[in-house]
Image (cartoon, rainbow, N blue to C red):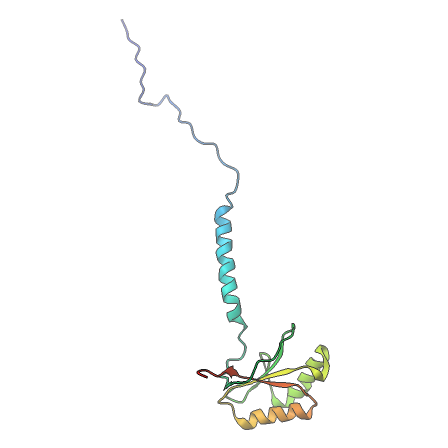
Length: 150
């Protein structure tokens, strides 16, 4: 008498059932990464707009109204170098380059924002302002920081 015993230990004769391969992409981690990158870029974007590093003087003057286009900035750093927006320009080339820029943008009526480091030579700043006035530029605004503690 032979006995037939079935083994329930799952030996070599039994196959295990696996889940079928999923062919869909899980987009949740990708969305999470994109949102984090969006926040990082939104926070860091305003920090990238700094032009020529200057230590501006302080005043109690009120701010001017701004228009939609990028303003034309003229900067004089502490070493006496002159910049149009972020590009260094020799003082002799200043007026022809400014006239070319303002002719393309709106003529001599364009407002020019002048930024000068508080340690900049007063003679250099006066020379630049004199050349602007002599060339017919009528709207010149001096950029300062708001005075602290008043």
